[in-house]
Image 1 (cartoon, rainbow, N blue to C red):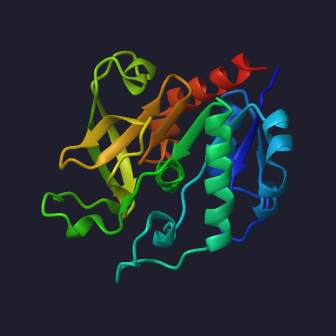
Image 2: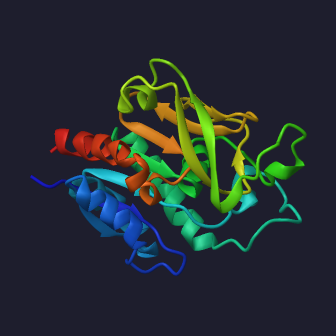
Image 3: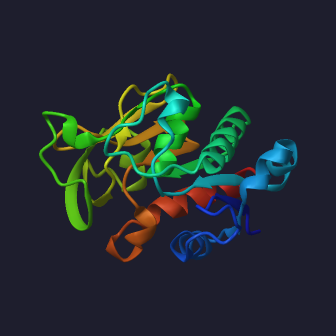
Length: 225
């Protein structure tokens, strides 16, 4: 049976997520359905319908949600998107549902659970890599015994893409850092064996060996049916 996967969300609040996400979910055996901003009005209904939540990439999270003023390099925020995704992330997390949080989605998950963000990673003295290029690939170091380590058959390193200028700072309680870039930025977190967040975009690297992340995600969603 194909598990129904909630994909949240889009900049304009419609229900048509990027085809990269839908394709990755479908290829792994799931049935994707996009959520708009009105989804937050019926959280109990969503939790009963959907087997898992996919939080997608996108723009900056409004720093007001983690108690900071906007950085000069901040990009325009869509507050209603932030509100929707923060509520969805907390609801699915508290319900023990599988979550895959990608790039901005990882940042949303961290903020929803009480963490905060570096608003501009290039302010950090340790930042040596160009983290915001569609063309960049760089290695990450994976913690042995972690969820990501298991998904990739025991590998302790991975080559990833990098399209962000923000990153996790204070990691929320309950999330465990399981991968970092060579200059120390958080590249992946987990909670138990049902929640995985990646700063990189595996949906854009299916042909470069990242499909196992979605295989894991859909298998977890299917197990809960």
